[in-house]
Length: 203
Length: 203
DNA sequence: ATTTAGTTTAACCAAATGGTTAACAAATGT
DNA sequence: ACATTTGTTAACCATTTGGTTAAACTAAAT
Image 1 (spheres, chains in turn brown, red, green, orange):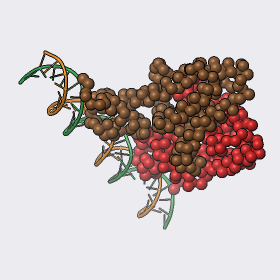
Image 2: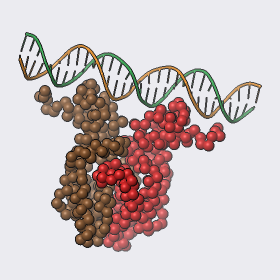
Image 3: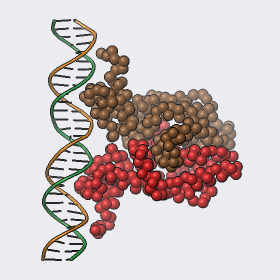
Image 4: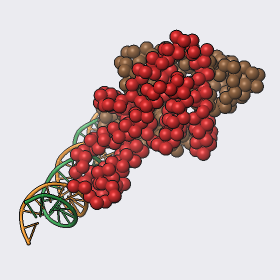
């Protein structure tokens, strides 16, 4: 079965589909465009992935599975809360700089298709925040940080890290800066954001 | 020219188009669907707005102009920095609760079409953050808040306020809570977020 | 060499889609 | 009263789109 080509047609298609879907979304993407991007015939898409919907789901799951394990790993290791915040911020921002379309893709498509999240939850490696929650509550009990619902802290961490990438066209407009300067701002945030968060929950 | 109907056909169409476009995006929306939503014939859409693109642009501009003045007003009034943060957070969150599709719509479509932001900037009432920047710098000089680039503070305020609404399907999944509980969390944030920010920049 | 199974393509198809047309109805002006 | 402009519709059209089919090609198995 295995072709001697360096990459199989199947992953070639998946990669092409990733590029197109992540740029244009499910509705904006065209099967012909994906076929062109993969350098193959349109019928071959349907041979490997029966329909646009299934191809999209494969792409989406693959994209999500790139993000989720990282999130999970950091959330559930044995670092202190401070280190967690620092590592999360540093890792996440540099990861997203490498995959700039990812967060917007995931969030946009999840909004269009909220029930999709159910399918993801049952997947193993779906991030769990239980340990993080306990850690926050412990820190509060021990008087190390100011009282805050762990849920809010979690949302705040995600928001501060992810939002600037999702909203970059808008923020560039508000701040009146070009792509180059914006990118530099994003690099600053790798430390800026964790300082901000740690300050916010300091006693 | 004016029909005696309580609302003109033109605004009726615009409202229907808003609902559909904001839910499904430019690519996902269908002209027939908008016509049905407005209770009129499809050809009438083209009579008032020549094309799908133009109808979409009217909707987008109208949506953006709902948000922008509020942002502008708060950013440029004479309140203290603390009050600004508090007011912004309180007003914005309650505003978004009333228009839940808006932020995601604007951000998604701006990502799909980044050059669109140029057109918006030239529009009057496009938010300017100059006054806010000066205010932040003043506060830092006077030793009232910890040093932070105004750009970062601005991004952080936007992120903490807007992100939870954009990413709600994802966050509901991570937090394992239902829509009702999530909504309650959002209401808490009206005060939670400003406390968080003010704490973060306290000396 | 022939079969067999998997892979790839060109050609095709039905449905959907944005947009147009021509006729009709309702106001409006004279 | 009548003509003219404005508003509205049903029917239509060209193109695009996701998907199918049947045939051709490839490489291993017999």
